[in-house]
Image (cartoon, rainbow, N blue to C red; front, side, top):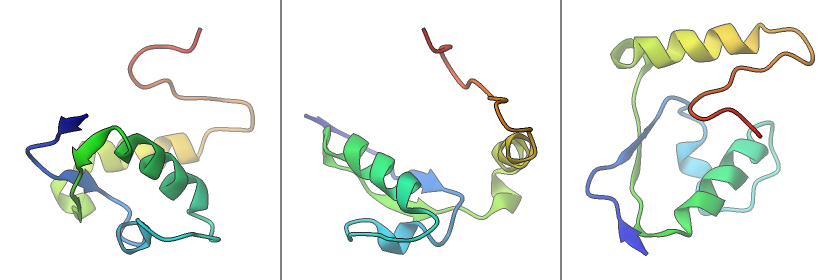
Amino acid sequence: MAHLPSPILLGLRVVVPLLGHIVRSPNAAIVHEILIHCNSFISCPFIHEHRNFNLEIHNLAKFTCNLGVGRHAWLGNPHD
């Protein structure tokens, strides 16, 4: 298990308080995926970072939310 020396910054303010709880909300899939990845670390602090300080990521997320059904944005390595 690894230790993350700096906190993970999240742009979705409503997700941060839900971490560590069973969630049944529109953001449940996001929280579930975050919790799965957290199991790989000894320490994994999260804080909210407002979109004004992370404008590039905010714009990317905003763009991908407007893609049509069946359209995807691959970040990092493409799916096999």
